[in-house]
Length: 142
Image 1 (tube, rainbow, N blue to C red):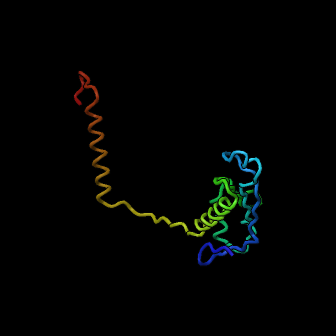
Image 2: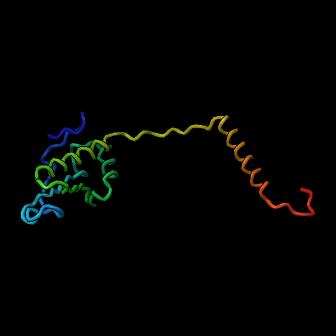
Image 3: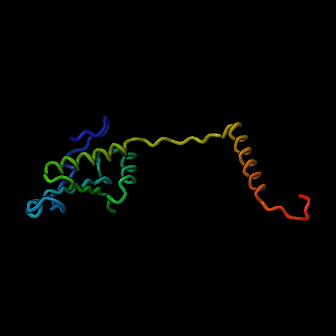
């Protein structure tokens, strides 16, 4: 069991890891050893995730989610397989923790009387500045 938060724990059988050849630095080792890790986690059908967390995770993951609701995370930052495995698990746990947090609800507030007065004074001042920049026409009494 992988403990994400106090109320969420994921069974290790729900997570599938596959090792693939990584691109980038590593010399001959990169051509011989499959050090990159591809993690697959079926978010849509996971019994470990509450409904709210599942919906937020599907929205949060963006392009990492397939049409079937499978989350795919790649880790190829390190040269060793074990380091990449730990990295991909940490990234999965962090993503689920973000989804577990409820978004803060924005409460609409009214502008204060002082802020309204200040806004109108600023508008008047700006209008006066622009009015004074105009060219004065000869025959008008304005």
